[in-house]
Each structure stands twice: as C-alpha cells, then as structure tokens.
Length: 197
Image 1: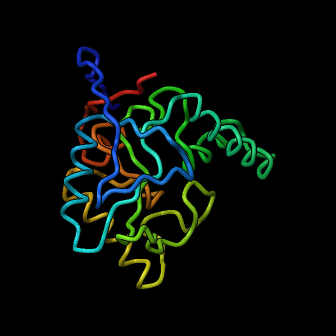
Image 2 (image 1 turned 30 degrees about the vertical axis):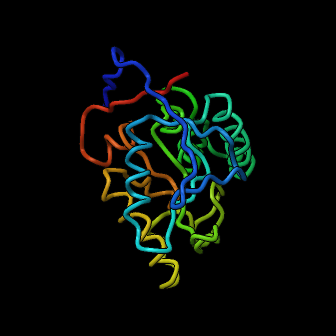
C-alpha cells in the first residue's frame, strides 16, 4: 500500500513554456500545468540532451474529467471484446491501458506526469513506433522493436531517469516523479503527490 503524504504541502503548479530544447505539442492536450519540481527536472533533462535533440511534451496535468474521457471508451471496448469477463477482470485489463480516474488516479491528475518523446531541433519527432494512448501491444517500453526504435526508446528512458523520472513500463511515452507509480517503481512506501482534483 502506497501512502501519500502531501496533505499539508500546498500544490505548487507552474506551466511548461517552450524553449529551444523543449517543445509543446497540442495534438493531444493544451493544459501545460505541472508540479514545479517535475517541470524543473524536465527542463534540466532537455538541456542535457546531445546536440540536436529536444523533448516534445504531449500532455502534462490532466483533470479528473479528462481522465474519465480516456477511461470510459477503453473500459467499454474491453467489455465488448470480452463479454464473458467479470467487471473485475475488465477493470484490471482497462487499468493496463488507462489509469482509473477513481482512487489514486493517474500521475497526470497529480500534476506529476508527462507524455513525451524525443524530437529534432526542427520539431521532427523521432520514431518510437505506435501511437501514444493506443490499445497496442507495442506500447510497452521493452516491447521487441527494431534497433532504431530501441535506440530512441532507450535514449528517452535514460535521459529522464537521469533526472529522477520513472517510466511506466506499459507506455514508452509516460514518465512521472513523486506520484504513486514513481513510489512503486522506486520501492518507496510513500508518494509525494496525490490527484489534485
């Protein structure tokens, strides 16, 4: 059981702003708020990348209402695809693809997670194969992919891990710091950040 000890800590949210090494891609979302500590880690990471590489962020903070918008269609699709499954089985499988909005929710809801990939300075995205936020077997970070894709995925993971961010193994694009996932991956009993709303 992961405890969250944020109760007395004020929520310190700031917005990402583009730099020459950090891009914001509004294809998925347009709310660029994030915890200050996470923003600072991501900015430092972007500046440490080898020349010509940049970070491109697709999503940061996600309100609970938006999480429900992502959750409901996945839950419905799995229910249709597996009509013989119990509600618990459907819930467990849906949780692999989208964090349930109830309870601890997503690290995005805590302002502690980003969806990100590497890009070139001209904003050309590096190939990571497979869409973000899709029900796809190739989404897991360690999925067998071509050497070029493996190199891109490994560079992204190594860069963000170097600044204390952890990758959600089921999604090559999702990284967080201080949330429930981060606590689980790093073997801690406590997370810093709970969902904001």
